[in-house]
Image 1: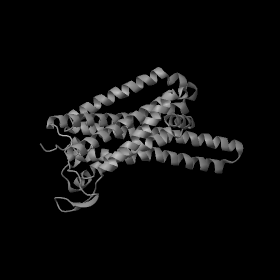
Image 2: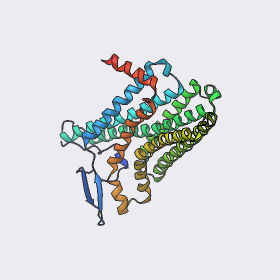
Image 3: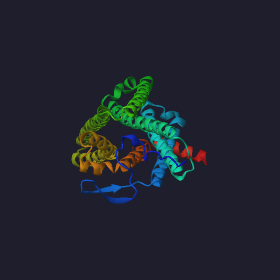
Image 4: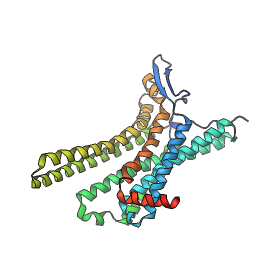
Length: 317
């Protein structure tokens, strides 16, 4: 019995194009124009997934080990790491099964392969939704800590944080199951795209407002010290750079995937859209890259977490 081919990448049911076979090719479209098609080798997918897996496991282990990190903010960061961890596990699992099937090492029935693909799709979809939700939760938490500093510990309590975390996970699982079950319905794709736009807008508004408040605070300090221009400009540039990194990473890593979903609804048969569809694997690779970058932005910048991470690594050796 020949090996059955698993869909080439996660959420393959949403991909309406065949997999690429060359690293970088100009694939002729059926209507004439040539398309730039980037193929992501399976080895690269495995490497990205394993790097993300190790990074996020270390984040979860460090937060679990250090009781000083048992606060709502770090719990949100831990859940973000767990969401990214699901992305990595799903990617490594699918790629490994796909390679085994193609090599003929693993032989099974088509129904079993389809069920496995559905499980992987639910995992990756729920991890995507939860990852965006926890990015939003982290932004809200930081916003409250800045604008309501005196009331922060009474507003963001541990029980309330646990309820928010539980609600996000339940909503993510339900959303992923519905999305995979009704993936061929236009309204499902539009809801996913709308959710991404809403979360991106929420993060942009909150972080821009926080940057404005921080610059205002820096101006006040500068006036007292009579060094307004150097301090304000330097702080403003640093804050703008941080804001650009925060929002830019989310937009660059997640945007192409949701653009893909939007075009499936808007122009599924248009030649130009067909060229974009051919790079579906690249868009998924960018999401995995986001799972690698998230710990660098949200976790490893904490001195306390870095110190705990060193202890974890020393214990592991």
